[in-house]
Amino acid sequence: MASSEVRRGRVPRRDVVPAILAEFGSPERLLEAAARLRAAGYERIELYSPFPLDGAEALLGLPRPRLPWFALACGLAGAAAALWIQWFTNAWDYPLNVGGRPLLSLPAWVPVTFEIGVLSAAIGAFVGLLARAGLPRLWHPVFTAPGFETASVDGFWLAVGAGDARYDPARTRREIEALGPRRIALPEETA
Image (cartoon, rainbow, N blue to C red):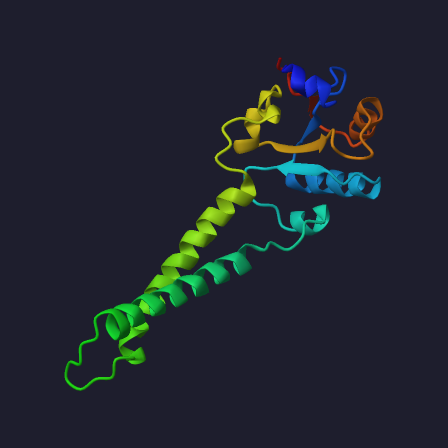
């Protein structure tokens, strides 16, 4: 650990596990356990499942995504840029009067403007999704938990992070054990 981190007060506590993970046997049991933990006051809960679970977003209290608005803004900006480039090149920088058409010929520019708008929206949605999800993330501490690899096959995992205001390693573990998981796993400590 760098000495500057120690001076800034960012010394990680060795006795605090970054998360407590629990595996459940079915998606229904996982959602029920998450609901009970939310009712107990936990807010930083993550669910890991091999497929999307209906109602998980509402249960966890996740806000509506802003990605569609970001994609719309990128699409409109791309369409405006396409219109501006066509106007600049055809009407201002190098005007040509071909066949008596006007220099500001909007109907002729609709296909290019539409396609650039759609392309910009798609690129904006892709980049926005990667940025919001924190990808590409090749490693996360929960990946070191024993048995966590089943989350991509047939396991249904719940994690309560140490960043939760209600998190206490012993109490949180007791509350999770009371929910009846198949197993509880802790991420391995990395130096």
